[in-house]
Each structure stands twice: as C-alpha cells, then as structure tokens.
Length: 512
RNA sequence: GGCCCGUUCGUCUAGCGGUUAGGACACCGCCCUCUCAAGGCGGAGAUCACGGGUUCGAAUCCCGUACGGGCUACCA
Image (cartoon, rainbow, N blue to C red; front, side, top):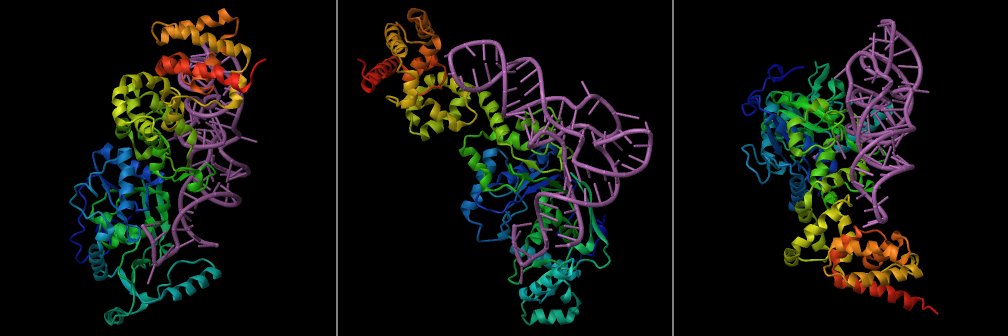
C-alpha cells in the first residue's frame, strides 16, 4: 500500500502534515435530529478506543447539508452522547485547536484543499450535466457492468478546461484516479486485508457545481487536517474507503487506519428502522433504560471481552476495549437482553441511587413534587428496594407504586369478583381490618404477625386472605410485598380501603 | 449488472487445526415464596449456511454456491 510519501507530489500541501503517532479518533454524525442507536455504538467504539489508548476523541458534525443542520438537530446529538457519558475532547462546546467542528463552517478549507489537488493534477473539472450523466449511466448499466463516470472530461486538455472554467461554464471537480493504479488496498483493523480493483473506483465528484464539497471529499479533508489516526465507523462505509484513500493520497496525507464495525440490525435481520422500536438514544432514555445499561449492552454488540463476561462498567470498558475483538458480522438488537441487563443495573443502584433515578418519573406522573419528595425521602428510601427488585425499566415504576399515592383505588370488576366477593374473602377483609386497626404500631413486622394469624383464626388458606387484602389495598393482584406495602400506605388509607372493599361488594351484590 | 462484506443454539457471542462446540439473554422444570419479581438448582436448544478441496485430523485454511447486507448520486 502506498502512503503519502510515495503518493502524488503535493505541490503545496504544507497544511497536511503528518500526524505524530498520536491516537486520535472522531465521531462524525450528520445532524438528523436524534442520535441513532447504531451511531451511538460507533461513537462508543471511538470513545473507548481513545480512552484505552490515551488518545483524543473528536466530535465533528458532518452537516454538508445545511438544511438539516439546525441548532435543535445538533443539540439532540450532543444530548444523546452526554446521556451515555461519551464526552468528547474536541468538538462543539469543547476545546480544540482543529476547529471549526462543523462542516458548514469549513467551506474555505475544502476549496483550499482543492487547490492542492488542482495543482498536483489529482482533480479536474467536469462539464457534463446531470442529465447527460444519467443517460450514460443507464446505457452502461443495461449493457453490463457500470464502472462509474466515463471520464469524458478528463480527456479535455488542461488549457481548454481552464479556459472554460474561467469563462464561467458550470462544472464540478472530480478526482482523477491514477491511470496506472491496479488496486486500492488497506488493512482494516477489524476485517483484515481489504483490496479493491482501482477501476471499481470512479472519478467521483469532489466539489459540486455550487462549490460545496461532497461527503467523501469533505470528510477526508477534515480527517486529514484534524490529524485523525484511526477511522472507526460503520461498515456501510467500507465501500467508500478506496475512494477516500485516493483522496488522502492526492492530498499527500498519510492514510489513517480504518476499522469497520458491523451494522446493527432489527429483529427481522433488516436494517434498523422505526418499526423495530426505539432507534434514537433518547427514546431509550424515555422508556426507562439506564445509560450505563445501554452502554454496556451496546459495547457487547459486536464486541466481547472474553465470551463470558457480560456486566462491564464504562471504566472497565475503557480499560479493555480493543478492535481486534470486534466481530465482523452484523448483530441483531435483542431487546429482551437489554431489558434483563437494565434490570441488573437497576438492582445494583441501591436505595439512594434508585430513588434518584425514579423520582423524575414520579414527578412527571404527578404523584409527587420536588418539594414533597424532600419530606418523603425516608419513606422513598424504604420503598426503593421493594420496587427496584421488580422492574426492568424505570417506566414500570409508576404503575407499580401509584396505589401508594392515591386516595383510593379502582378495582377491576373481574378481579373483584375473583378475589373479593366470596364469603371467605369478605370475612378475611373484615378480620384483617379489625386486626390491623388494633395494632399499637403500624409497621411491617406487627402487620405481618397480625395477618399471619388470620388463616388459622378463620380456617381459610393464607393465599386467599393475602390476595383479598392485596386487591383491596393495591387494586391489583400483583404488587410489591404486602406487609411492607401496608406500612408504606399507612394505617388510615389501609383501613379505609379495606372498608371500601367490604362495602363495595355489598353494594354491588347485596346478600340476602 | 459490477465491486465489496458477512454466515457457530431463536438472539448476542467464545472458539483462531485435535473441545463432550463454552457462556449470556429468552424458553421449560424444580426450589424459595403473601402476588409478582429477584435468587438458587437443573433442562432443552448449534448436523458450526451448503458443496468441494487441503490435512492423519477442519467450526477453524483454500475455492465455489446459496442467502443476507453495503456501495455503485452534483445523499451522508
């Protein structure tokens, strides 16, 4: 493989200096309005690679399409990255001596680089119109293998071409693929040796008629000027790599190391899209996933530490991530496993941590307020372990604890019929009410003691009694542990609900 | 069409010439148990896409085929 030194003469490539053995990677999303989960994984790989090697992680916004580059679209990307804790060393809202970090603000840079390529003959003007090209393309395709632009304008002699350009004739600038080049090859850090026939690379457009750069051109100019040492990206860019290598060489810049990550697919094996569920990182946040869980899960998608270890913290990842353990086949997002992992992280939060995470959800649901929660703090800390053990996602918390915050509960008629309307259940509710009313202190241990005495007293199965009380008090057949729940609810509400459960049945189905 | 990439339990993966093909999620059963979870124990689940080679020996190396994916734009 030819490196810069052996490449075309640079003429005046002074700005394209060699990177000095420093590890420097970049994540360069286009501002689509959200951070896609697949992109997040690319960002994570770059972040971890940089951390592992003590290198620099650059965030660059590849917004060659100014339409999309709104403040909101950009900040959505930044929010997503920050939520995951992927801090960048250089880029928007960070320091960096290589900015600006928005392609829309680097127009002059691309034109300047083009001068280098004009001077060393690696770029030439093309006057073909889009319509002409389309005709040519169709003709070539129906005939067989299409091999890109037919290089018509490359044959125009330089003086003539320069004159036409000077005369203001509309034109684009194309890369001149070296005629003597047989192949373009490189060693991918993940997939090994890659080789492409040079004639599979066409003289693609570098700069459009309107003077704006194309992606494959702009990104190379930026990677070169920002001294990126390793380009870690999705394998949808694998086929673009030979094109980009040729531009690096034309600019007289060393070619970075490439690493192409496999893509993430939906459950049906197709490219991930909306119908597969959440695709944006913020959607995962809104569904109650913890950033540390998403991060851990994402890291394991296409990468493994040893094939055994699954729970890996960000810190541990930063110490152990390596490209040679990235697999090269695409991975399907398994929401079940993500849910499981999220549950593990939730359980590891501890009471304090869990309260901190669930509080915004409670407030959002209108169950409490910031002010109230201060006073409720000890109560919330008691509640935390009862709930954290039973949820996989934070969005499950509100439905599970709602009964604790309401004045009364609604009971589904079918559930009521099944658990509360039998005579035994009615007797149990009444007996439980009496026993609980008589307790000197309304705490879990005495509550449990009182209720456990009931089965023998009444000659009824414990499960029937507990289930009746549970439904009466929580409104559902599934709830956090009963005795603890009653303490958290408090005597007053508990007794009121037991009364209502008895009365409710009487109203609905008066006994003879 | 052309050029590239990929293919180990349903899913994520370990494996890098000799293993009873290992682990995790999901699934099933048992235990624990006031429901649901969590936890513990056990189980089922992969002719390593297929066909040829190379080799004493192949999931591992080579070549084909099939299937999936990407690129092939004055999109990124």
